[in-house]
Length: 490
Image (cartoon, rainbow, N blue to C red; front, side, top):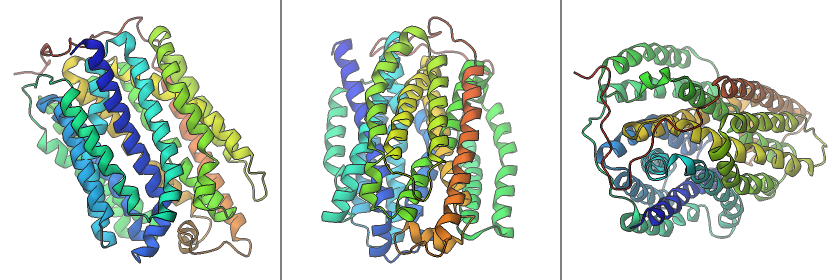
């Protein structure tokens, strides 16, 4: 297979994988009220259909990137598609809320393999001067997937039932797995091992912290919930110690000595923390306060996704020629301005402002993601493509999880949690002035997001100007990666 055909195949598969993950995430949010009613599940349980996916992908993604380095990125990507498809089928047939949560966990394992190895495949196959454009198409896949999730979610849930939002993944997953086996490069495996102690420590402290935050969001502050947070925080210290001592760590913490890489990764984390719960907050506003249906509420956000999708490849080409620093910082700034504008929406504000603001956020999304992803992967070496791609994805997933939990906690603090959750699930109404109090909580959460995005913008700019050319070059397709000795190798 020629280099160009290999690049086309990788671009198609990574875009399709991103599209599937995006479709699933937006569809599940839209279908949550219907699933809660049909499965007779309380909010505190059904919310885990979203949170379990975020938690597992955050914990597993970096290790999934290492698996790609060890077993082959193309092979790991295909296995991830297969597991994701199986998890989708199990989710569609779920007889209870607990079964659905477990099935979503299986889906998350496959999603982690796909998400972690997608960026590594692009970095391994595309030369540095064409990576930005390739990452731009990943943004296109995410935007199109989110749009399809919005458009299909309401229609499928209303006409066919919520189970079909998972069943639609089955034919797509089978096709993607078949295409991947036929076309993805059979890249060379590397002699390496999984960091089991590091993975156990990382998963444990992440689970404790996430569970504590989620329990606080749902039930309020208790001694047990605070204890989860404290214990999880204490485990960070031994985790860092283990990672710095092992020769093949789960997280390449030594790579963070590279200022460009470290600041780009942390900026990506804060961008996820500050922005990725905004859609949830807008759903609370449009459905809970303004009384729109899930489909009508979501359609108001489609313009932003369209702009972000179309802009991604174009920005990627500009990044290849001009560098990532300005574009990444500008993208975060535009998102911050959009969130600030959302925070001004009131009880009677003309709803036409929502799609107008979403256009601004779309410009930010389409500008930031291809620029920041390119900046990260150009600082990786062929040996660490999978590990760095996994670290990038882990920080993004962790930011998304914490963003969701923090936004939920702040937005629901102004009214009783049962009222807030009943409104979100579509089984309650905001009466007697409660809508104004609830809107105050939503505004507070949005203001918090603006502050976090400001930190991300400062970090993105402060990383400095990247070199004119990438420091590393991907190996030729099918060629073994040149081993790079570690400073601490025995």
